[in-house]
Amino acid sequence: MRAVVQDAYGIAGVLRVEEVPEPEPGEGEVLVRVRAAGVDQGVRHLVTGEPGVARLAIGVRRPRNRVPGADLAGVVERVGGGVRGFAVGDEVLGVGRGAFAELARASADRIVRKPASLSFAEAAALPISGVTALQAVRGRVGERVLVLGASGGVGSYAVQLAKALGARVTGVCSGGKAGFVRSLGADEVVDHREAEPTGRYDLVVDTGGRRPLRALRRLLTPRGALVIVGGEGGGAWFGGLQRQLGALLLTPLVRQSLTCPVSLVGAEDLHQLVGFVERGQLRVPLDRAYPLERAEDALLRLSGGRVLGKVVLTV
Ligand SMILES: NC(=O)c1ccc[n+]([C@@H]2O[C@H](COP(=O)([O-])OP(=O)(O)OC[C@H]3O[C@@H](n4cnc5c(N)ncnc54)[C@H](OP(=O)(O)O)[C@@H]3O)[C@@H](O)[C@H]2O)c1
Image (cartoon, rainbow, N blue to C red; front, side, top):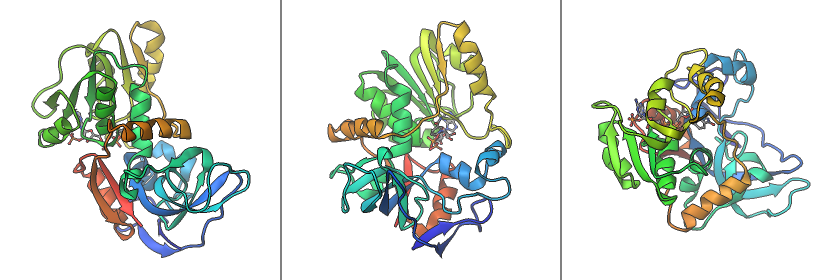
């Protein structure tokens, strides 16, 4: 089968399409014929080996897994042992291993049926960013929500989900993307190149900009919740994880809730997300779909900060 492969960390000049052996579904897994694969900052980290500390887990000199990609949408090709609820031919979305390929393995508890209303490209843009946004807002939405990085993958879902859950939403993004963020339902938009957000919010979802913890806390009501999802540009080795560490240490001592979850995509959350899609409360903001051969361009578009919402590869 054809797959994107890499034998070193990096994007430009590193990723290429090659013939590789087909994967076999293990116990509890299905083999998915991939029709589209999502591209997000998480994949970019794995492809580039940044921040450096991640290499301790994924391979010190080069990535242990040659085929990148996690988010996928496609058709079940084979069903492994012990799998119930999926059959050959089912159209699915979720998270797999080595999704930048014609075939990929996926745990049956990390995929769900694809709704007919979504194309494969849209469906592949949903899992990781959508579940991360859902986990950030669920149970925390008060009257007012602030989404930092509202134009990005996680942020564009967080804006829509917070609106669907009844909040007044302020989105923060660069000025050229303000119209896009309004189209997602944001009531107000702040251009971070012109001004910093002000006011007090019941929930602040932080996905971009790397503001210091004390600045983020000033944006919260006395019992507000801060969810630090992430943010790029925090340093080559640790990626600025100090903010998350600070939040973890401080939260037991203050009335505000300061969290920095690591989102794990499971079928239950995917079902909930699909529910929002089917009720017309969540749309997939697809910026662009690239063919598998152009994985490099897709990742460079993402790292260049040009994406509105999500980018995918189509297979
Ligand atoms: N914890 C987890 O489990 C988890 C899961 C998924 C992602 N993440 C992390 O979360 C972060 C966001 O992921 P993503 O996929 O949504 O990334 P993304 O698509 O690149 O979105 C980030 C957005 O932040 C905006 N931004 C940049 N500087 C900003 C600033 N100063 N103020 C406000 N917004 C700013 C960017 O565009 P504009 O400034 O041009 O508007 C961009 O749209 C990444 O660091 C990723 O690694 C963590």
